[in-house]
Length: 504
Image 1: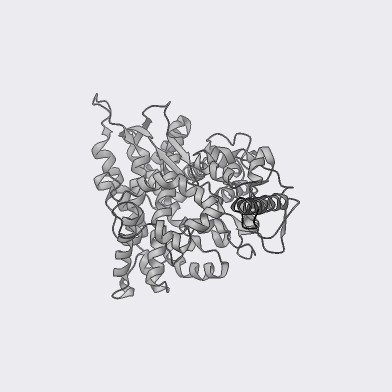
Image 2 (image 1 turned 90 degrees about the vertical axis):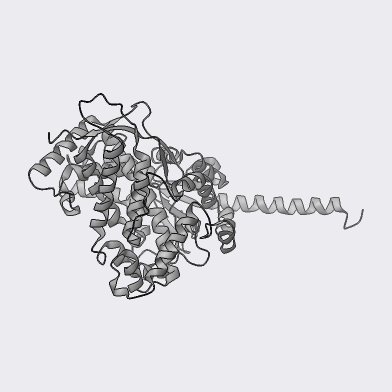
C-alpha cells in the first residue's frame, strides 16, 4: 500500500478533521461547563439557531430565569442574564465590554456600519456624538408635528374604511391592526427622516414590500446571525455584496435602500443650514454621505419594525383587558374635558397622564420588542458574574424575555397584563420598575438612539386612537398571531372599530 493510497489519505484527513472538531467542541464546552443551561446549547450553536428559527424564541427563553437562575449558557460561548444590574454594569459608559460579534449579523452595507452594528466602543461613541442631536429631537423642530401628521393619516384611514357608526346594523369590516400599525410606523419613520412619507397608509399597502421581505427572511437571518461560522460568511464584506440588499433590487429592502440613498444624496447638495430633519442634523455634525445612507437605512429597518410590534401588543392587551381599557378611556375623557390634552395631544401632556404611562410600560414589559442576544464581550482578563468566573471573550447578553416576567422585579402576577402595578407602589419603586422596563431600549453607551422618538410615537398614537375610536376584538379566541425570531412577526390582529362614544 503506497503512502499516497487514496483510501489511506481520506482516512487520515477525515480523522484529523474529526479530531479537530471534537477537540474544539470539548474546549468550548469545558470553558463554561460550570454555567447552567440547556445541555445541547453547551455543545453547539444549532440549539440557539433553532430557538430563533422556531418562532418561539420568546417562550423558550422566558422560563430560563426560574429554571436555571440569573446566568444561563445559551451557546458554546454565549451567556444570557435576566439580572438588570448585571446588564447595566456591562453596558455602562465606562464598561470595558465591547459589543460581541453577534452585531455583525445586523450589517446591511459592505463598506459602512450603522451605529447599531459598530463593535468598537471608541468608534461607536464618536459616531453617536454626531447623530445624537438628530435622534433626540434637539435639531429637528418639526419632529412632533411630523408624527401628528401620520397619526391623522392613520385615523383617517380607519374612519374612512373600517368604522361602523354606533347603533347601525351595517356590516362590520375587520381591521387588521397589526398590518395598519406596520404601515403607520413605516410612513412615520420616513416622514421624520426624509421629510416625506412613503405613502403606505394612503394606499393601505406595503408599497415597498418591506414587511413582506422582513417577515419572509427573518427566521433565516436570525439563525445566520446566531451561528458564528454562518455569520462570518453571510455578513462578511463579500457575503453582503453577494446576498445583501442592493439599490438595484425591484422589491423589498433594496427598493428602500435606493429611496434612502437618493434622498440622502439630495441633502448633501445645497445649504445644510436649511435642513431641519434628522438627515440634515447628521450632515451638519460630520457624517459622510455614505455613513448617512447607511444610518438612515438601518433607522427604517429597526425603527419601523420594533415600534410597530410594540404598538400592536399594547393595543392587543389593552383591548383584551376590559378593566384596563375602561380605566384608560376614563383617563382620556377626563384629560380632554379638563383641557389637559390638546388636539392632538402633545408628548409633554401625554407624559403627565399616569395611567397612559402605566399602560405603555406594562405593554413593553409583557412582551419586549426584541428577543435577540445583544451580547457584550467579556474583556480579556475575564470577569465574575453571580459568583461564576467568566473567561475573556465570552459573550454575555440580556435575557429580556425572562427579565420582564420576573416575579422578583414585577410581582407575583408578572405573567399577566396589569398596568396598575406601576400605580400601586411608592414613587421610588415605580421609578425602579420603569427603569428596568426601559432596558428593552438597551442601556448606557449602547442605548437605542431612537428611544425619544419611539416614546413620542407610543404616547401620542395610543392616546389618539382611544380618543377617536372604540375597539373590540373581532374574534377573542383568535387574538393575534405572533412569532419571535429575534424580533416579532405579528399578523391577523383583527378588530372591529366604531366611533368613540365617550363624548356623545
